[in-house]
Length: 129
Image (cartoon, rainbow, N blue to C red):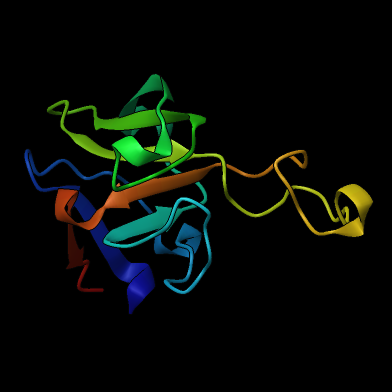
């Protein structure tokens, strides 16, 4: 059962206290993509260190384009300091507003944070209960 999964850091083995009940479905659409990652809507802030990252980068300089000017936050394991993922601001809209000119959600509408973890940085095991 997925809710019994335990997510640990592959580097130091620390339990990251991630809950499958906050896991987005794998087919959920995100502007910044979701390939090779697991995305959560909530994490235990005591298990991680968060470092702000603000880059202005032309889209042609990177294969993994995530915006000309986007802010994201690095998620690092509190145990060993390994980079395990990033926080993006492209989660589900936080309001039921139809958006500017009724054309759907846009950057103007506040969006929930998305905690995106690299699958290579997580070890998933069953709790056995």
